[in-house]
Image (cartoon, rainbow, N blue to C red; front, side):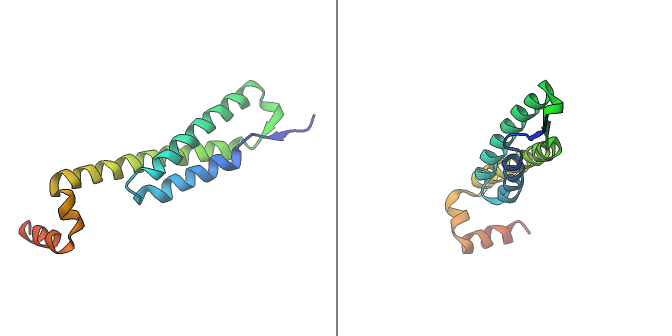
Length: 108
């Protein structure tokens, strides 16, 4: 019997990469891609565990899963930083570069 590729193996890898690349977008976009990639990877690995000789491409799924986990961590950190910055400086201050410069000069 010929082996077939695991479903969504390439998509999982792409979502893992996108979740890392978009971690600077306030942590929201990459978090969504990371969670979707992780869920799809877990489903694919469960399918592979049931019948390993029938599927190939498990390494792509494992790599995508690792990238999704890293992306989730980076996005949670970015989101935490944004929440801290908004609570510390205020949204209006973050929108005004001149006011932000004045506040940063006070702390130096």
